[in-house]
Length: 78
Image (cartoon, rainbow, N blue to C red; front, side, top):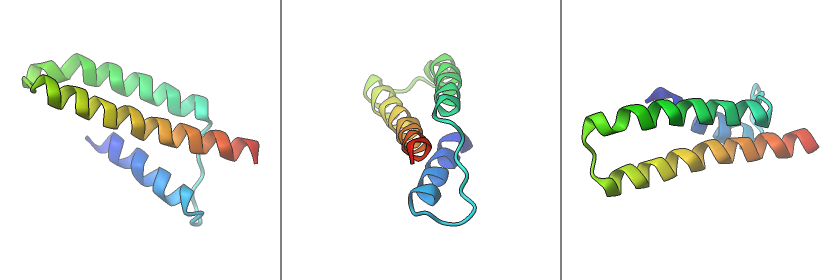
């Protein structure tokens, strides 16, 4: 699951103002979120997770993408 890790790392680097962090547009992050969650939702049940894990992990994934989109949105307004 490299995508959520990369999204979280990009958020961390950009939120600290470290050199080299270029954020995509918030709309692009939302596209990534929709595509990733569609793939995740389509595959996760095949791994037979508990309903609690599925709900909790999906919430973390949504929050990860939302945090990056929000940061990108704030950057666009700066």
